[in-house]
Image (cartoon, rainbow, N blue to C red; front, side, top):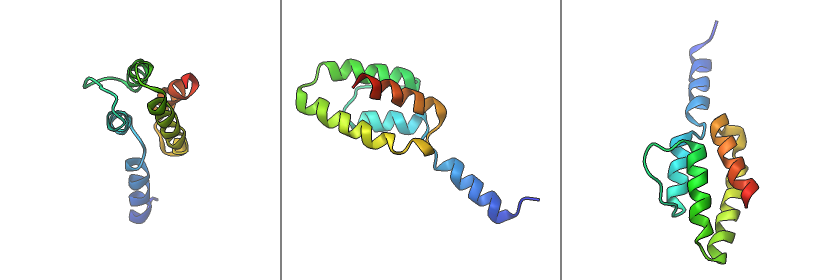
Length: 91
């Protein structure tokens, strides 16, 4: 039997996961121009394309930002983890 407090903890854990919307907003906040409705992997590909046109300071800062985001992997949905890996491997 699940107690109400346990149910709330599970609900909080689920809502705290980094999902594709969070990933999309994260990349947009970094300056990556993204079209609505892209999958996490498509967002990563768009970010890599955008990054190739940026100067070295922007690329370094973006790589550092991605490294920080990787520390959040335990609270990411699997598809976001995979998309982040695409970015990290390419940097």
